[in-house]
Image 1: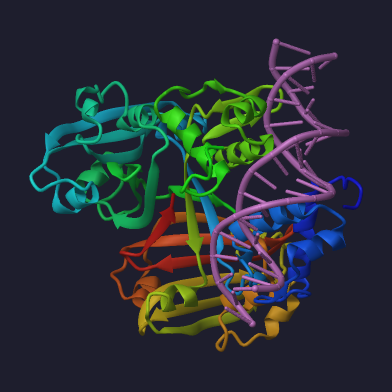
Image 2: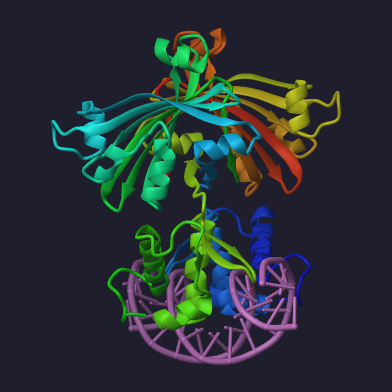
Length: 235
Length: 235
DNA sequence: TAGTGGTCTAGACCACCGA
DNA sequence: CGGTGGTCTAGACCACTAG
């Protein structure tokens, strides 16, 4: 590989070259591009280097790879946005504001059907239900409405949610779970409007997230953000 | 590595083991974990295998790696959601519906200040402005309000946007650009409400995206979706 | 069934930066 | 300055699947 380019590693130089050839239509969308061995010969590097370059481009959605069939330029490129959704506290303090939260409601009760199904509970089973308001510099930042599966994490029932937010407790005690996230827009109810300090009916960004530990549903949460709130995605 | 586990590759087995040790608090948040050489010895595999396993976990936000300082369990785990935002046509047809779109407006005109800055244009420079309504089975699916930098892609001015949507033309002609995506909630204006078939003030999911080719801004677009529309993120 | 990508290894050199 | 991660190599075997 052209002796130590100033710009980073060899596999990245390979990626740049591949991208350049796609852009200038040397390799148009859908085209079959040379195999790893051929490219390694052309670029004068090891096959593993080409392999890593192409593997990452495939993960990024730029290439489509199949054994025996070879590697093609993706015909229908998909825009992928990586959203980082940090813990609320960090979201607030990272922007230099003071974090605070109020526990508005806490009960152990049977969840509505939609939540029950999402948590995989038997009908009639109770779960921990908590609603909190998170604040930045005292101003409303996020309303959190959370259900926790007590079959999965029974110790949650004895946590003082006024002292530590459910969010943080779960991150500490049940780390590294998998999650499904949904984003949508919702109109503020009377109650939500009062909490967030906006008119009823105002458009709120709503994030719903269900979290599993393996196959076991742990918690499902609905986060509401005041008008103007934005989630920013990288690449 | 424990002789060809049924579940996938060796580096994945290493990842599972690392995750297991984080979950059971063998390695709590913030803890320094053994180096690549030690782990390679323990797992009986090559250092490269450990390296790949840990590199991916670091990219996923589970580990934090620093030269000389070693590898630590991330203290403030971030939930990362990967949003796939396909081309509108695909989004519609993938769900078995018929795709259609109407060009509502097209002009070459100086953009408002916010757009002008985003596209990096000199004051007074005109850009291509297009507004379209995308339909699924005839029903409103998305309102697209787009500005295209004609300094970057002058040939855009001669494209028949009624025949091919700006979205698809750009994907075909200017592939593999980098982008910034923002999601928020917005209230429907009178015009938007009429287009999307919802009451004025209804909460709309708004996606704004600006796209660059290298450092050159290409286009910025605002996508509005009717109430109930959801974006789903994987992991 | 042959050829592609997927993975692994043993060894090596290097850049970075914390102790 | 020395140890860590970051990368690269040459070679090997394997899994999958298109032809």
